[in-house]
Image 1 (tube, rainbow, N blue to C red):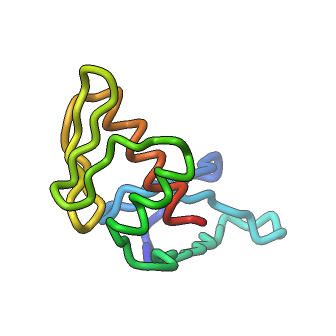
Image 2 (cartoon, rainbow, N blue to C red):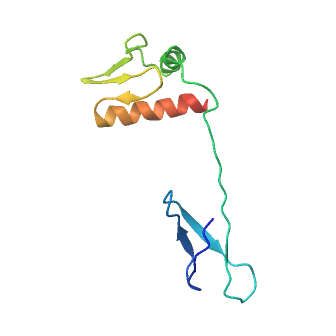
Length: 108
């Protein structure tokens, strides 16, 4: 909890520990005292990543070039490697696409 001074014109506050930006909300009175309302939402994955289920997910999307044993996915001349925990290694454009697929898979 931050207990330092605020300018009366200050609208946001940056946390010195985590770097997040928080909006400062006036308490309704004309006093110089202002409140900080912090809302923290912790969202964890709803399921654990399973590379075999991810392979089936890609198969439904028409992608047949993924090998769940090695974790290698080839599209054209590009290749990425997906680890057992869902981390993706490889060139930028394909890596970003596969990370979006993993995000869609984990949210389904």
